[in-house]
Image (cartoon, rainbow, N blue to C red; front, top):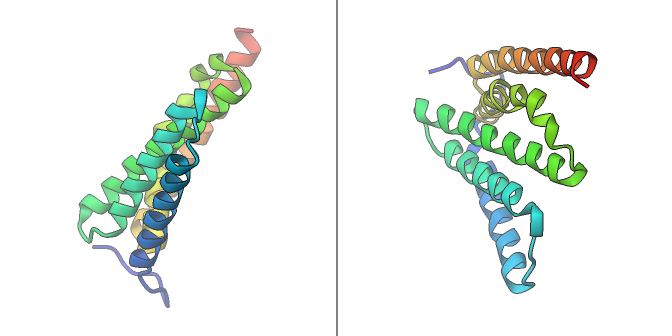
Length: 149
């Protein structure tokens, strides 16, 4: 697989257990307190799905784990972007926020997976994807704000 980082141990079981415990606590509170997230329901469910997939990815020792981690952070980024848009009402930001979801979300998933699993290769690939995503975000943001508003 990948080269382990020096002196680092694989803490994936602890991270997965903490994420599952957090998700269970959140759902217990939501159900028993009958909390209705209202307009934030969709971002909430994207974040919950992303955390669940990330916890599941921590348990996998194959390449599937890295792919699940990438999918999970793509869902998390989608949830964060939707949360921002619903909170501020800035729905036009879809135009320039897509690079934060697609290349940056995958990169964040790989960096988190590599960090928890103590593997160097996913971290390096993830850093490149994050840089490309944020670069595209800034470029599209500047073009959109300068020429189309």
